[in-house]
Image 1 (cartoon, rainbow, N blue to C red):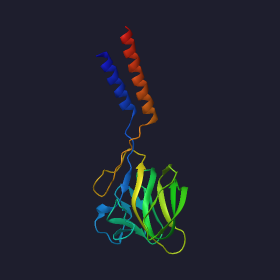
Image 2: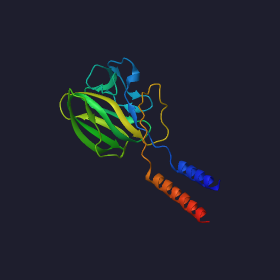
Image 3: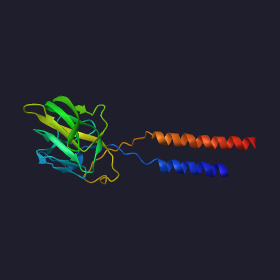
Image 4: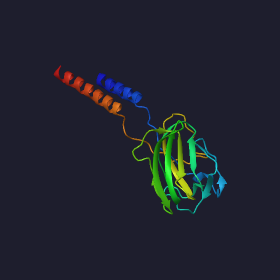
Length: 204
């Protein structure tokens, strides 16, 4: 009975020391219905979008396998701010015609930039090895005229207060199942203590 209490206590400590990890959020805009050419300056409680961006309903090659209806479209630069504070940006799908830069920003400063081309193809544009927090994302035209579509914006929030799923937010949540290193260490030490106690009892 005493051994059971020790194990239960260790499990409770591990539970308290292991807060739920943030989930990836993917915004696909498919809940907006038919919105051909509709100006879009905000999206739910997630994004504040700069002017000149419209919500467009397909067909267009920007539509990814995970999203079959709507996307953001612009004939110029496109940028948005995350309304609930900084996030870890995981990537987006882009298509259109032209050469572009993806800028990740924090506190008004560009912290990461990469170039990519979209010439009628649907490409995934990720942050490569950059995993720092950002509060704004900008996709800008390299030169000349271009048409840009963006869909399936994926990011991991770093804050605990988030918009309620559902309603205007169409979400795909992917739990991060990787245990924290501190959690693994705590579990190992707890199991080691239980094993030592069992050995002492057998010797006694």
